[in-house]
Length: 119
Image 1 (tube, rainbow, N blue to C red):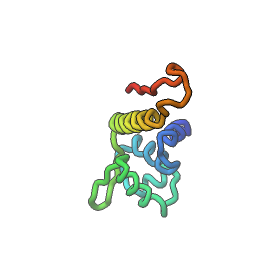
Image 2: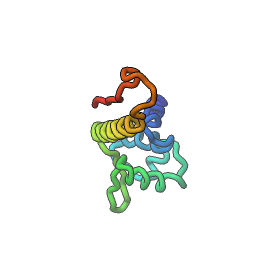
Image 3: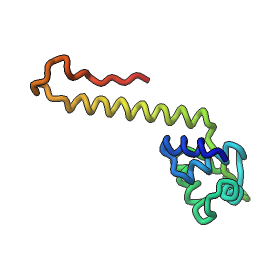
């Protein structure tokens, strides 16, 4: 597994184990928890808890059955969702920071520019 993809997923908010699991699932398409643990190098006792957490975050889907299978959300869908959430948070933060700007604080009118974020 490429270390770079794990590092990049972590920069996007994945934990180390989540990043390893997601990268493995992209390769395997769908797999049992034991296969994922083995290929990702995630300790077996942590695999189910991590996979359930990833499902709640929308990173993986669980296919109930015998055996239970796990598959990843398509990378394009995941990246779209992360980008959308990030832009929403960025815009919200910009609005909140702009609201903190004092009206008459002695700054010249041109010294403080309103923050504007583009998608």
